[in-house]
Length: 224
Length: 400
View 1 (spheres, rainbow over the protein chains, first blue to last red):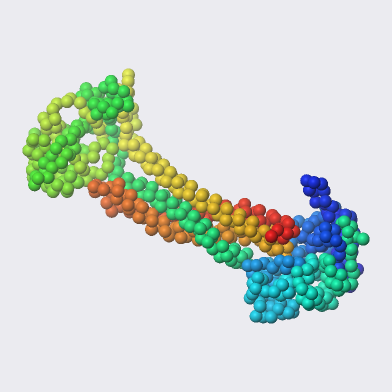
View 2 (view 1 turned 120 degrees about the horizontal axis):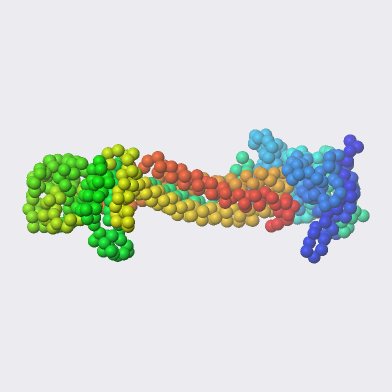
């Protein structure tokens, strides 16, 4: 395993200027994530967990401080460069699944590859990943609305994995699922971690956080 | 291609909205193309009936001539050019031919109980062959009280050389039938009876004035010089006559018809712009409805220009389908509009028969309408597409 951190936050702050006054979502956060870690980010609502996850996922840029991904500074990158990083190196899993309703399950999974690869190759890879997350072939052509919550989250995980990313970022991945389905999803994420994927997830649930090997607690935008 | 497929699916998802937008474009394209074609048809019709080659100077009384003010409708009726002025014109135009024209109207009986009013044109016998050609029969001999009949009048009343007719109370015979002359800026004898000036004076009384004088210029390059010479001699102190050369009139006519065409196309353009505003609206609604979806796409790796492209595809597809259908329909409807309009415009007349309505210009208007339809659709899609592409992924994903 390389000594270069997969993610390095150095004095990262995020301030949202609002008419009622500035809101400090992240306050001078410094942290390091090494390759292969399984981290849970916990904290009360509004503590800055999601903002932290967005920064890690190249979805947002800091107001101050620096972020490095595999030693490369990303906090000042252009929108297109950040988008390519999201596409190629980061897999995102959301509480609301965030599947594209116009597309079938397999098309949702194919989407990130289709941005760079030809269709034949993308279909083969999508089938492989969907099968790996436990979606039956008969459900491949179903639209998200025709799938259960658990199935949708599996499809979302398959979509996150399809480009073989370095990091899986999950925002409350079991938040919309019943306990049994939530456990199955967490087992899936744990399995991915065992295969070498770095998994970082935001959660409220201590049982879910128990899957992680490290927990980062955040309160009022600061890591405690 | 995935973004093109997205665009198609989204348009299908909201098919009623898409269809309405397409209908808007269809109407706009049809309006531009068919109105352009109609204007073009009018141009073609005019071009087909105007036979003047531009070697004629037409001198008419200035409308204020005779002491009445210009707006007085009697001025045009009363105004005439006295013989002495005609002589001034003749000297000024020399060596070119000066042809004074007498014009009036009278009731004519064509035999077999057919009668009607016809225009009577009086010309000096020696001037008739210079202005008019004979299709059948011959020019009347000197002092022979016979007349020439315009081709359409002859056809309508079955006149042939030798036919009898009565003008007013005077019996006469047809000496010859004139060849078709079409629409000219001097005299239009196709529906008229041409008589000698002596016959005319004898019949209508000796007025010693002429409503029109024509100068035939043998060398086209001298038209301006002849015009100027006439103007200088006769309009020296006050404007007595209006001097116009047919080339100038022709140019003005063409300009008027060109402007009519531009105006018609402009009306079509407005309807297409309205359709484009509808597309802007539809695309804007589409963007607003799909902000969350755009956020997801951006979140998982779609670049700004991918999103821009997707929405532009939507606008382009609407414009393309609308324009293609509009182009096809306008080819048919434009033809019908032209035919109906021309039918109405030329009812009872025989000129303009068999001319082509479809020429390259007409096809050009269809192509222009289609290109304008596609162009305005894409332009209308630009802003919403740009807005969609510049949404921050996090903010967009947060919206429901």
